[in-house]
Image 1 (cartoon, rainbow, N blue to C red):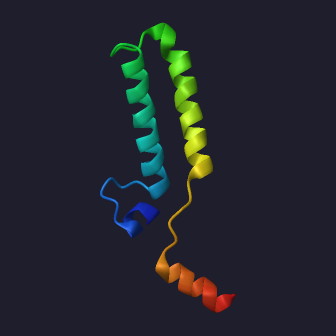
Image 2 (image 1 turned 180 degrees about the vertical axis):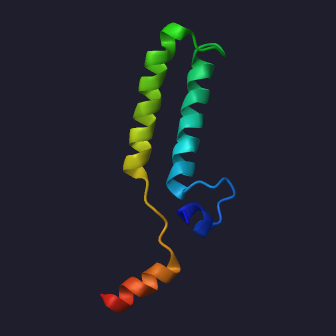
Length: 78
């Protein structure tokens, strides 16, 4: 069973994937707005670069939510 079902995410995605999906959507929205509602084929490498940079920033900042039951287990065995 994946973590997505453990945390009850209806999309079937883990919390990290949900965070990445949202970051990618925000960056794509910004890129489309910046380019006049249209991404030309010649712009795809730059858009891909910007999306990749957003993913990197998101991964660096992302901290998984700690579940209460795992905290209790960790504290008992520490």
